[in-house]
Image (cartoon, rainbow, N blue to C red; front, side, top):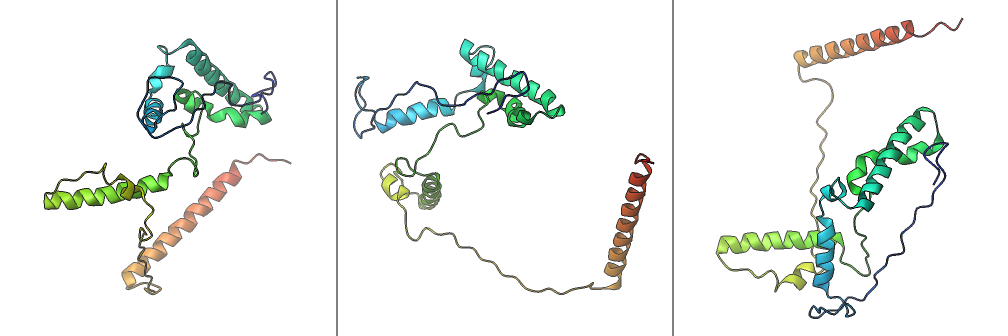
Length: 210
Protein backbone atom coordinates (compact mmCIF):
# COMPACT_ATOMS: atom_id res chain seq x y z
CA UNK A 1 0.00 0.00 0.00
CA UNK A 2 1.23 3.56 -0.57
CA UNK A 3 2.95 5.56 2.13
CA UNK A 4 0.99 7.91 4.34
CA UNK A 5 2.77 10.96 2.90
CA UNK A 6 5.60 11.89 0.55
CA UNK A 7 8.24 11.09 3.18
CA UNK A 8 6.81 7.64 3.91
CA UNK A 9 7.80 4.66 1.71
CA UNK A 10 5.25 2.19 0.37
CA UNK A 11 4.77 -0.89 2.54
CA UNK A 12 3.58 -4.47 2.11
CA UNK A 13 1.22 -5.89 4.74
CA UNK A 14 1.31 -9.64 5.35
CA UNK A 15 1.06 -12.26 8.07
CA UNK A 16 4.19 -13.01 10.06
CA UNK A 17 6.24 -16.20 10.15
CA UNK A 18 5.06 -17.44 13.56
CA UNK A 19 2.74 -20.36 12.89
CA UNK A 20 1.59 -23.22 15.11
CA UNK A 21 -0.36 -25.66 12.97
CA UNK A 22 -1.54 -28.77 14.82
CA UNK A 23 -4.54 -31.05 14.34
CA UNK A 24 -7.46 -30.87 16.77
CA UNK A 25 -8.70 -34.26 17.94
CA UNK A 26 -11.54 -35.29 20.22
CA UNK A 27 -10.05 -36.72 23.38
CA UNK A 28 -8.58 -35.86 26.75
CA UNK A 29 -6.25 -32.96 27.29
CA UNK A 30 -2.59 -33.88 27.50
CA UNK A 31 0.35 -31.93 28.92
CA UNK A 32 2.52 -33.20 26.07
CA UNK A 33 3.18 -30.13 23.84
CA UNK A 34 3.65 -32.39 20.80
CA UNK A 35 0.28 -34.16 21.27
CA UNK A 36 -2.78 -33.17 19.21
CA UNK A 37 -4.90 -30.41 20.67
CA UNK A 38 -8.39 -31.02 21.99
CA UNK A 39 -11.34 -28.65 21.41
CA UNK A 40 -11.26 -27.39 25.02
CA UNK A 41 -7.69 -26.16 24.59
CA UNK A 42 -8.54 -24.31 21.38
CA UNK A 43 -11.63 -22.74 22.96
CA UNK A 44 -9.58 -21.64 25.97
CA UNK A 45 -6.93 -20.09 23.74
CA UNK A 46 -9.49 -18.14 21.72
CA UNK A 47 -11.35 -17.04 24.86
CA UNK A 48 -8.10 -15.76 26.36
CA UNK A 49 -7.36 -13.43 23.46
CA UNK A 50 -10.99 -12.55 22.75
CA UNK A 51 -11.32 -11.15 26.28
CA UNK A 52 -7.84 -9.66 26.49
CA UNK A 53 -8.04 -6.11 27.82
CA UNK A 54 -6.98 -3.24 25.61
CA UNK A 55 -5.02 -2.00 28.64
CA UNK A 56 -2.49 -4.73 27.85
CA UNK A 57 -1.30 -2.58 24.94
CA UNK A 58 -0.97 0.55 27.08
CA UNK A 59 1.95 1.90 29.10
CA UNK A 60 2.08 -1.31 31.13
CA UNK A 61 2.14 -3.59 28.09
CA UNK A 62 5.08 -5.20 26.36
CA UNK A 63 7.73 -3.15 24.60
CA UNK A 64 6.64 -4.62 21.27
CA UNK A 65 3.01 -3.62 21.87
CA UNK A 66 4.06 -0.11 22.86
CA UNK A 67 6.06 0.26 19.63
CA UNK A 68 3.06 -0.81 17.56
CA UNK A 69 0.72 1.58 19.39
CA UNK A 70 3.16 4.46 18.93
CA UNK A 71 3.49 3.67 15.22
CA UNK A 72 -0.29 3.55 14.79
CA UNK A 73 -0.71 6.94 16.51
CA UNK A 74 2.07 8.47 14.44
CA UNK A 75 0.63 7.23 11.13
CA UNK A 76 -2.86 8.46 12.05
CA UNK A 77 -1.54 11.92 12.93
CA UNK A 78 0.53 12.13 9.76
CA UNK A 79 -2.49 11.02 7.72
CA UNK A 80 -4.53 13.97 9.00
CA UNK A 81 -1.90 16.46 7.84
CA UNK A 82 -1.30 14.61 4.56
CA UNK A 83 -5.03 14.55 3.82
CA UNK A 84 -5.19 18.33 4.04
CA UNK A 85 -2.37 18.50 1.50
CA UNK A 86 -4.21 16.12 -0.83
CA UNK A 87 -1.80 13.18 -0.59
CA UNK A 88 -3.41 10.11 -2.19
CA UNK A 89 -2.18 7.59 0.36
CA UNK A 90 -3.55 9.40 3.41
CA UNK A 91 -7.07 7.98 3.13
CA UNK A 92 -5.83 4.46 3.90
CA UNK A 93 -4.48 5.58 7.28
CA UNK A 94 -7.08 8.07 8.53
CA UNK A 95 -9.05 5.59 10.68
CA UNK A 96 -6.02 4.12 12.43
CA UNK A 97 -6.34 6.56 15.32
CA UNK A 98 -9.69 5.04 16.34
CA UNK A 99 -8.16 1.56 16.63
CA UNK A 100 -5.04 2.16 18.70
CA UNK A 101 -6.40 -0.19 21.37
CA UNK A 102 -6.54 -2.94 18.74
CA UNK A 103 -3.04 -2.04 17.47
CA UNK A 104 -4.59 -0.64 14.30
CA UNK A 105 -6.52 -3.81 13.42
CA UNK A 106 -10.16 -3.19 12.49
CA UNK A 107 -11.24 -6.73 11.57
CA UNK A 108 -12.39 -9.78 13.49
CA UNK A 109 -9.97 -11.17 16.05
CA UNK A 110 -10.55 -14.71 14.71
CA UNK A 111 -11.37 -16.07 11.27
CA UNK A 112 -14.24 -18.51 10.71
CA UNK A 113 -14.39 -21.39 8.25
CA UNK A 114 -17.60 -23.00 6.98
CA UNK A 115 -15.73 -26.28 6.41
CA UNK A 116 -13.78 -26.43 9.67
CA UNK A 117 -15.59 -24.45 12.33
CA UNK A 118 -19.18 -23.96 13.35
CA UNK A 119 -20.87 -20.93 11.83
CA UNK A 120 -22.19 -17.95 13.76
CA UNK A 121 -25.65 -18.61 12.32
CA UNK A 122 -25.68 -22.10 13.86
CA UNK A 123 -24.66 -20.63 17.22
CA UNK A 124 -27.46 -18.06 17.05
CA UNK A 125 -29.99 -20.81 16.29
CA UNK A 126 -28.65 -22.89 19.18
CA UNK A 127 -29.01 -19.94 21.56
CA UNK A 128 -32.63 -19.42 20.48
CA UNK A 129 -33.40 -23.11 21.02
CA UNK A 130 -31.66 -23.14 24.40
CA UNK A 131 -33.54 -20.01 25.53
CA UNK A 132 -36.86 -21.59 24.57
CA UNK A 133 -36.02 -24.84 26.40
CA UNK A 134 -34.87 -22.97 29.50
CA UNK A 135 -38.11 -20.98 29.57
CA UNK A 136 -40.22 -24.15 29.19
CA UNK A 137 -38.40 -26.08 31.92
CA UNK A 138 -38.44 -23.09 34.25
CA UNK A 139 -42.21 -22.89 33.98
CA UNK A 140 -42.58 -26.62 34.55
CA UNK A 141 -39.97 -26.80 37.29
CA UNK A 142 -38.01 -29.51 35.48
CA UNK A 143 -34.19 -29.75 35.44
CA UNK A 144 -32.42 -29.20 32.13
CA UNK A 145 -29.04 -30.56 31.05
CA UNK A 146 -27.91 -28.42 28.12
CA UNK A 147 -24.66 -30.36 27.78
CA UNK A 148 -26.63 -33.51 26.99
CA UNK A 149 -28.66 -31.61 24.38
CA UNK A 150 -25.67 -29.94 22.70
CA UNK A 151 -25.87 -31.98 19.48
CA UNK A 152 -29.60 -31.35 19.10
CA UNK A 153 -29.20 -27.63 19.81
CA UNK A 154 -26.50 -27.24 17.15
CA UNK A 155 -28.26 -29.38 14.53
CA UNK A 156 -29.60 -27.63 11.45
CA UNK A 157 -33.30 -28.36 11.83
CA UNK A 158 -35.37 -28.09 8.64
CA UNK A 159 -38.23 -26.47 10.51
CA UNK A 160 -36.05 -23.75 12.04
CA UNK A 161 -37.43 -20.87 10.03
CA UNK A 162 -38.36 -17.28 10.71
CA UNK A 163 -42.00 -16.39 10.13
CA UNK A 164 -42.46 -12.89 8.78
CA UNK A 165 -45.99 -11.48 8.73
CA UNK A 166 -46.55 -8.36 6.68
CA UNK A 167 -49.71 -6.75 5.41
CA UNK A 168 -50.14 -3.47 3.57
CA UNK A 169 -53.39 -1.62 3.08
CA UNK A 170 -54.05 1.63 1.25
CA UNK A 171 -55.19 4.20 3.80
CA UNK A 172 -56.03 7.01 1.42
CA UNK A 173 -54.67 10.39 0.30
CA UNK A 174 -55.22 13.97 1.36
CA UNK A 175 -56.38 15.20 4.76
CA UNK A 176 -59.11 14.01 7.06
CA UNK A 177 -60.28 17.51 7.97
CA UNK A 178 -59.64 21.21 7.35
CA UNK A 179 -57.35 21.52 10.38
CA UNK A 180 -54.91 18.91 9.03
CA UNK A 181 -54.94 20.62 5.64
CA UNK A 182 -54.16 24.02 7.20
CA UNK A 183 -51.21 22.57 9.17
CA UNK A 184 -49.79 20.83 6.09
CA UNK A 185 -50.09 23.92 3.88
CA UNK A 186 -48.52 26.10 6.58
CA UNK A 187 -45.57 23.70 6.97
CA UNK A 188 -45.03 23.62 3.21
CA UNK A 189 -45.05 27.42 3.04
CA UNK A 190 -42.48 27.69 5.84
CA UNK A 191 -40.26 25.12 4.11
CA UNK A 192 -40.33 27.09 0.85
CA UNK A 193 -39.59 30.32 2.71
CA UNK A 194 -36.63 28.75 4.51
CA UNK A 195 -35.22 27.32 1.27
CA UNK A 196 -35.53 30.71 -0.45
CA UNK A 197 -33.75 32.53 2.39
CA UNK A 198 -30.99 29.91 2.47
CA UNK A 199 -30.41 30.32 -1.27
CA UNK A 200 -30.31 34.13 -0.97
CA UNK A 201 -27.84 33.90 1.93
CA UNK A 202 -25.59 31.55 -0.03
CA UNK A 203 -25.60 33.78 -3.11
CA UNK A 204 -24.83 36.90 -1.07
CA UNK A 205 -21.70 35.30 0.39
CA UNK A 206 -20.25 34.00 -2.86
CA UNK A 207 -17.20 35.98 -4.14
CA UNK A 208 -17.68 38.23 -7.14
CA UNK A 209 -15.66 36.70 -10.02
CA UNK A 210 -15.96 39.76 -12.26
